[in-house]
Image 1 (cartoon, helix red, strand yellow):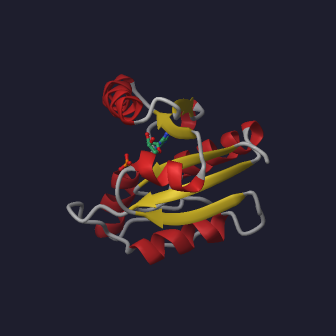
Image 2 (cartoon, rainbow, N blue to C red; image 1 turned 45 degrees about the vertical axis):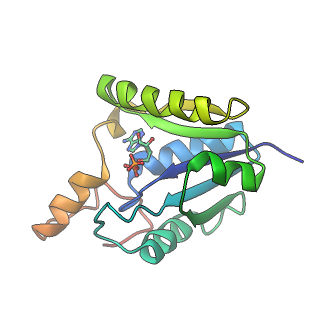
Length: 152
Ligand code: ADP
């Protein structure tokens, strides 16, 4: 059995930053499970189904990427899927502080699951889903922020 990493997030919507992190993960792992966390408290622009289908479109030619939605704790989902590695992306020092807290919490919940961090190339480091949503709300062109295969 090969090594699988889970890349959990909101992906509301997927951006060039996410896409590159997934490509980098594919060079390190046999397969990548992109896992959309269902969070009832968080208002999203796109439904879970829309977010899943966008990511599936982007990776339509990559059978090593699987897209799923999950609710509950990420570590519980990992255990149910026999996945031992959680991947998160880092953009800035503030990301690091926030992510370290989550990683320690997950470690306290299950110390057999490792959190790994990857950094996107500098040209993608400023891109995030909330910028894309803002531009969309104002009817702007988001093609510089989202994967080439998507039109929003
Ligand atoms: P969440 O709501 O869980 O933060 P996001 O969809 O915003 O979900 O992000 C999912 C993951 O992708 C997070 O680890 C985030 O840091 C990472 N990420 C998002 N944009 C970028 C980027 N431009 N470069 C590197 N990592 C990124």
